[in-house]
Length: 377
Image (cartoon, rainbow, N blue to C red; front, side, top):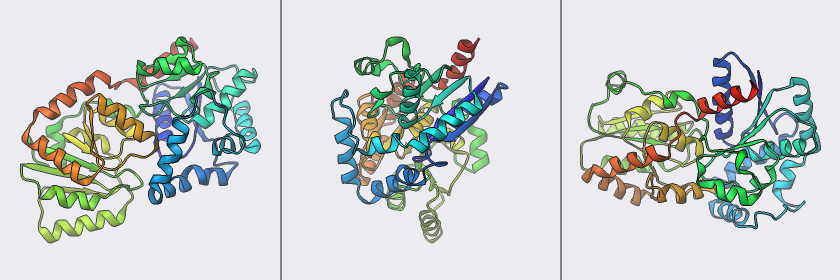
C-alpha cells in the first residue's frame, strides 16, 4: 500500500502529524512519502505560511489575533474573497499543478492531508472526479479551523473527538465521513516508560513535584523570566526546561544555574526525547498547539498555558479549560499562582489527570492506520 501525505510547513505541527502516520505505515511494511504543498513550487507562499506567519505572531500578536477572529467568526458558508489571503494561498496554478503531477506519478492508494490548504485542493479534485483513491483530512487542533467547510468532498475527516460532529455536519459533512479517532502523533508518546529508570538516567529526584517548561521548537515564551520566578517558589520541586532552538534562552539559564548554584533545574536545548521528559513530569508549562497538547495528553500530563495563545491555540484554550485539563493562565503571574495552588493542593493535578483520561486518544495513529488497512482490504 502506498500513502501520500500532503502537508504545509507552518511550524512543525502539520509535518509532525504526517511523519507520525508515515512512521506507523512503514513499520507495517507499507510505502509512504510526504510532500510540502508550497515549498517546491512557490517559495513566496511558503514564506507567508512559515516565516511571515511567525514574524507577525511574535511582533504583532494583537493584529494576528484580530485577523484570526475575523476568520473564525465569519459565516461558515461565506465563500472567501478572491482578494483574501486564503484564496491566494490555495489557488496557485503552478503549486496545484505540481501536486497533481506528483499524485499522478506516485499513484497513491491513500492520500492524507494535514493542512486545510491541501485538503481544499484534494476536495476539489475529488469533486471533479480526478482522484479516486480514499482521501483523509485531519483537524489538527481542539477546534475547527476556518474554511474546513471547503473540504467536504474529502472522504473522511479525522477529529479530536465527537464533540465537533454537530458543527461539522452544519458545515456540510455527513456523519459517516467523521472519524473521531484523535490527533495523530508519534506512537512513542503513547508508550508507558519506567519512571524510576528515567530518573536515574537524567539524575532527577524521585517522588517530588516535577515541572516541565517547554518553549517549543522555535523558542517562544518568556522562558528565563519564568525560570527565575519558579525558583522562588516554596516547596519540594524540580524543573525541567526545554528551550528548543532558542540558544539565547538556554545560555541565560545555564549562567543563572551556575551563578546561583541551583541544583533542581535541568536545562536542555533542542531535544528529541520529549516523550521521556514528559514521562518524568507532573505538570507542563507550554504552548497549546494541537500536536503539543496531544503528545502531553497521551502521557496524561496536564498543561499550564503561560502566554496569550495565538490563532487556533486561543480556541484550544477555551475548549480545554472547560474540560478542566489545562490551566489557561496567559501570564507569568497567573502561572506562578497556579503552581502555588498545585504545590498546596495535590488534588488539583489528580483531578486534571482524571479529566485528561476522558478525552485523550492515545492510540489515534495506530487506530487510523488500522482503519486504512481494513478499508483497503
